[in-house]
Image (cartoon, rainbow, N blue to C red):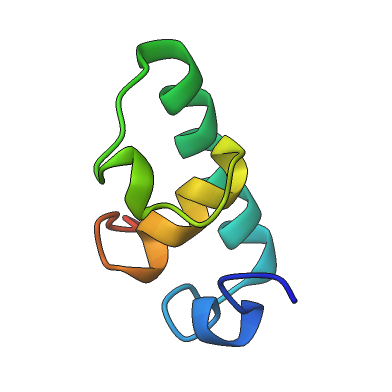
Length: 65
């Protein structure tokens, strides 16, 4: 099972396309700056794309129109 669920993420972001864009942009920032908003052991995902989705679900990222 994928974590976090796309159903819960779509309650935060209104479009699948916007969700992909936000997650990809945050994942690139994580790779470039080596900056994460949670502790390493708090993430369930090992890859940055999954970690960016976890941050979005926890409310650590704000989606600006």
